Amino acid sequence: MASWLQAVVVLSALVLFPVSVESVTRHYKFNVVQRKKTRLCATKSIVTVNGKFPGPTVYAREDDRLVVKVVNHVQENVTIHWHGVRQLRTGWSDGPAYITQCPIQSGQSYTYNFTLTGQRGTLLWHGHVNWLRATVHGAIVILPKRGVPYPFPKPDKEEIIVLGEWWKSDVEAVINQSLQVGRAPNVSDAHTINGLPGPAPNCSSNGYTLHVESGKTYLLRIVNAGLNEELFFKIAGHQLTIVEVDASYVKPFKTDTIFIGPGQTTNAILTADQDAGKYLIAISPFMDTTVATDNQTATGVIRYKSTTAFSPTALTTIPPRNATPVTNSFMESLRSLNSKEYPTKVPLEIDHSLLFTIGIGINPCATCQNGSRVVAAINNVTFVLPTTALLQAHYYGISGVYTEDFPGNPPTPYNYTGTPPTNIQTTNGTKVYKLAFNSTVQVVIQGNSIVAPESHPTHLHGFNFFVVGKGLGNFNPNTDPKKFNLVDPVERNTISVPTGGWTVIRFRADNPGIWFMHCHLEVHTTWGLKMAFLVENGNGPNESILPPPTDLPKC
Ligand SMILES: *[C@@H]1O[C@H](CO)[C@@H](O)[C@H](O)[C@H]1NC(C)=O
Ligand SMILES: *[C@@H]1O[C@H](CO)[C@@H](O)[C@H](O)[C@H]1NC(C)=O
Ligand SMILES: *[C@@H]1O[C@H](CO)[C@@H](O)[C@H](O)[C@H]1NC(C)=O
Ligand SMILES: *[C@@H]1O[C@H](CO)[C@@H](O)[C@H](O)[C@H]1NC(C)=O
Ligand SMILES: *[C@@H]1O[C@H](CO)[C@@H](O)[C@H](O)[C@H]1NC(C)=O
Ligand SMILES: *[C@@H]1O[C@H](CO)[C@@H](O)[C@H](O)[C@H]1NC(C)=O
Ligand SMILES: *[C@@H]1O[C@H](CO)[C@@H](O)[C@H](O)[C@H]1NC(C)=O
Ligand SMILES: *[C@@H]1O[C@H](CO)[C@@H](O)[C@H](O)[C@H]1NC(C)=O
Ligand SMILES: *[C@@H]1O[C@H](CO)[C@@H](O)[C@H](O)[C@H]1NC(C)=O
Ligand SMILES: *[C@@H]1O[C@H](CO)[C@@H](O)[C@H](O)[C@H]1NC(C)=O
Ligand SMILES: *[C@@H]1O[C@H](CO)[C@@H](O)[C@H](O)[C@H]1NC(C)=O
Ligand SMILES: *[C@@H]1O[C@H](CO)[C@@H](O)[C@H](O)[C@H]1NC(C)=O
Ligand SMILES: [Cu+2]
Image (cartoon, rainbow, N blue to C red; front, top):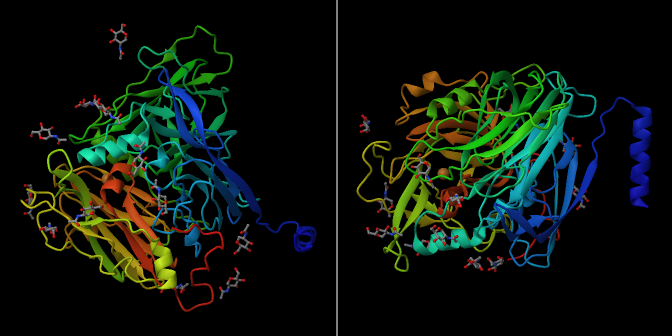
């Protein structure tokens, strides 16, 4: 009866106000099941959503509500994170295991329920417990509100391109082995484009093909769902026009190479303006230090209509693995649109000015091969996951789960990008940093040079942040702020902090709850490069976290 009444209300609203923009609830069912998949001439069973790899695309419009029932039919624990979704007051639906929820255990289900507010473009969803994300991921498409145009010419067609990584072994075995030994896990055996590596050595297999028609335009919604590698994306003979990243519009610019880290999304317009034929799509890793990568280039093709079967494929060069200038040029070209419709609201006054050093450390480990293990830390704290979810502990006032003393600055200042300190041990902790509702935050994310400096794609849950500055070496609090872009900095949820350098982000803590911040290289998350912000409730009517859903999983 109630739903019938609601339907009538919605209908009459439509009849009375035909131009009013109705938001709707969109329902999805995610059955988490094992499926056998063959890649690189070998078959293995993987955890999937609805049997698909990559998983199903979730479609919605800005302001819609998404209700996704996740049913766990596998032995492994499952959670799903809606990466980049603001989750205003609905932290219970964010997904990271032991941060906002306990895992959905085998045989159980949980319904994620949230709205998509103030965002439009492409995001991704992915598993957020252990290394589940390797095979449990897919795209989220947020279309503009009905009747609202894109701020760029409407492309003729849209295409989703999900990049990933494939291991011949079971990925849980890969990380388990790495933790036992105390050293870096094996790199993947292939990169993938929509689940396919393309032709591999000694293994005939087809790659991904995008069929295009001459003269038409295509909005490519590109997602890096890989675990441990930042990637370059190129298409032979074509320029791409970047129009959006992480579900925020940017000032359009042309490039022939996209730089995209795990957890990042990029919308690019491809114009089919070349002669009929086949053009290579190439995905290759970026690494400007000594850390090992999977060096396999995944390939696909763009194929024009009426291309003959024997037509050769136009090739492209891939950037060198250490092409730092290419990454800088791409990141520096990203500017938020900052238009009348989409103003850039970067905080100008800062309540909390924080400096987070991020990097690797080495701790003793009696059971490990050489008596030590590689860990990672923020401000020397290696974050240890609790066994009760932080959000529940916060909401119900359960003590002993976390402490509120996460350091806002490094405990002992040192030359972060110079000769590392002789003692490179870290401290274990389950610490959060507390923020008052609606306070403004600046975080200088400072990479350090302990063991191996490395580029860290750093992700914040629950917020978009503005990237106001970046540079090499140590952040200088006297001179560097003068160079900040406070006019049109790019707004995103994941940013690559340069190797041996720093990035400064700003955000407004207008979303009460517990929000995870971590390196989106899964290996670094596992090692402890993670922390959480606790944002208190405000005093206003809509400024408190909502009560937990009744089916919230228990630990
Ligand atoms: C989703 O949340 C809304 C707002 O709290 C609530 O009205 C609705 O019943 C929920 N839907 C489901 C399926 O839980
Ligand atoms: C990995 O380790 C976890 C925790 O010890 C264990 O439950 C799981 O079975 C292991 N998985 C594999 C594939 O070794
Ligand atoms: C990791 O790679 C090493 C060396 O190639 C191999 O011996 C080992 O079996 C691999 N581990 C897993 C879990 O695949
Ligand atoms: C491919 O096969 C050739 C011939 O059998 C062999 O020499 C080569 O090592 C193989 N390459 C790989 C990557 O397995
Ligand atoms: C990948 O390439 C780099 C640089 O060329 C090299 O040092 C490294 O050994 C390669 N890694 C693998 C796994 O082949
Ligand atoms: C252990 O130490 C030896 C000797 O320094 C080295 O060769 C080996 O690679 C180390 N093993 C690991 C897992 O770090
Ligand atoms: C830090 O170390 C680097 C590399 O040795 C050096 O160039 C720089 O001057 C040092 N910075 C400070 C503040 O000492
Ligand atoms: C990190 O913490 C460890 C353990 O408390 C300590 O020994 C080390 O000096 C600290 N390092 C830094 C850089 O603060
Ligand atoms: C730190 O935490 C890890 C588990 O994450 C544990 O194995 C290790 O023993 C702890 N180290 C100390 C010094 O407490
Ligand atoms: C947050 O603070 C800003 C600036 O002080 C103010 O304009 C805004 O109304 C506040 N928002 C809420 C929800 O309190
Ligand atoms: C609180 O939210 C409700 C429902 O979205 C809305 O109708 C109401 O106007 C909001 N109140 C304030 C003070 O923002
Ligand atoms: C799954 O989650 C439950 C609840 O937190 C936990 O007790 C159990 O150990 C987890 N299982 C694995 C294999 O990690
Ligand atoms: Cu990292």
